[in-house]
Structures are given as C-alpha cells and as structure tokens.
Length: 331
Image (cartoon, rainbow, N blue to C red; front, side, top):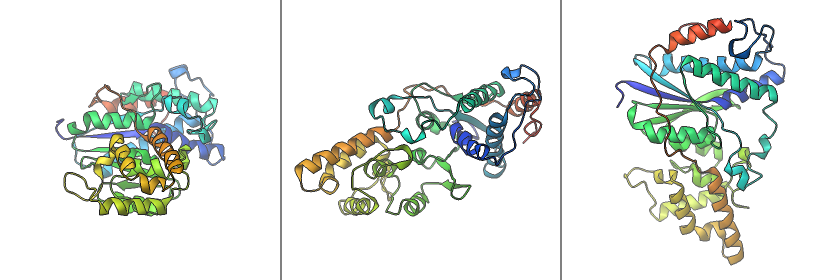
C-alpha cells in the first residue's frame, strides 16, 4: 500500500460538456490567448474559451478535493480519464449514445486535445485509449490499484461509475439539476439512487437496473415495458429468495459483476419475461443486449498511476507560460 496516499480519478469529458453548454448559450466570457506564442500550438489571439474553462473546472475540483476532503493528508495521486472515441458498443448497437452525436464540435475536439496535452505536460496521470470509454478506464484503475490507496474518489456525472463503490472507493457525482456534487458511498447509495430512480435500489444494483429498465442518457433501451415498478417487484422477489452479499451485509454487492447480473436475469426470467414463451424470449434478449452495453470493458493491464511530489510546481510553471494567471497559483 502507498503510505498515506489517496487517488482521485476525474471524468474529463464531463467537465468539457458542463462548460460547453454554458459557453454555447453565451453564459461564459470568450477568451483569447495571450501566453507564450506557439506553446501547445497556441498563438496570440487564438480563441481559448473551451480550453481555459475546462481546465479551470478541473483545477477547481482538484483544489476542493485537496482542501476539503483530504486535509492533512501528505499526498494525492491525480488521474484523468478521457473518452476514446467510437467503440465496439456502437458497432454492435447503432442506437447506443446516438443522442450525443454532434455534441462535441470541431472546436471542442481540438480543445480537448490541447487540454489533454497540457495536463500530461503538468504531470497528471492522463488516460485515453481508442475504443474505451472514460468509465471503462475508471473501472480498470479501481480494479487494479484500489488496494494501494487509503481511498479512491471518482469525479463524474455518470451513474455507470457507481459500480466502483466500496469501503475504499466513493463517487462525487455531479447533477445538472442541482448544479452540485453528491458524495455517494456504500452507506448512502440506496437512499440517493432510490430517490433518483423512483424504485428500490439496493447497493449495488446499477448494472441490473440499467439492463432491465434501460438508460435514456445513453439510449440503452432495456426491456420493453419493464419500468421502475417492475424493478421494485423484482427486488422484492430477490429479497424473498435470500439474495444477499455473500460477505453478510445488506445489498447485492456481487451484482457489480456482469456474469452475476446475467445469472439473476436467468433466475428471475419469469418476472422479467412474463408467461408467454415468445415474449419471454424477446425480453430476455433485450435484457442481455442491454447488459452488454452497460457492462464495463476493462483493460487487462493499465498503466499504474504515479505520485508526483512536484506536481504543484509544475502546474504553476505550465500555466504561467500559457498566461493562465488564475490557474498559476498554489493550492
């Protein structure tokens, strides 16, 4: 274990989308570059609105984490996960995330590329892999290195990241409806997610729920006609049958594993599929197809994050050259 180190993993694209909406709506001031000419390919007068505001949002959360959550801790390892473009989920199902098409403009793609280069130069652990989504990267990092840290904290708006919750990992989940983060842990998962989804949500049933009810934000259809009330009935039946976390605590921890979700779907096929054979067959097909879309795709090997004691000095040096005075300050 890395003595007294914590690990924070940031969803990079979430930050971009948060500021892009405000910029495109005319709610944020346009900025032009006035730093060292040619640095990261930037030249005097270039529009850096997306670049600066994305970095500023990330740095604000990093500072908040450092000051409010891990005060007194000697060190934090910072990792940032970027989306890796088109992946096999889209190839298998053309509807997957089709509602997001075109949301990242050409200017946005350029901004994200520059942001990634700047963060890498500073010394942050930056991850992007073709065919992998940010939540795939986060899951791979947690699975491989969670044991090495006092605590791992994930920053995202994506409920898919909640699969990582454990006694050593929690999630700061951003909700646009409140314009704020909620700190989700195993202790409050059920209450927070039951209120959001309008049905029983024992810890940790996120894969099971999305496989059956679906996920509108990603165009995952789930099982036709199977909504929150049906999910309530399913959970009640699972409780009656004695489904429990094998470690003895309440909840369904083992359902973070896709194969176990598949087993539950098989066991509960009468509730999910109904009594008519043809309908049952079709509904089970829909459930398994949705499960494949929402299940994380893990790296077999993922680069180990590095703790950089000189990170803050490096931040200041890079941001000063960029002319980003607001960011060129010590935490």
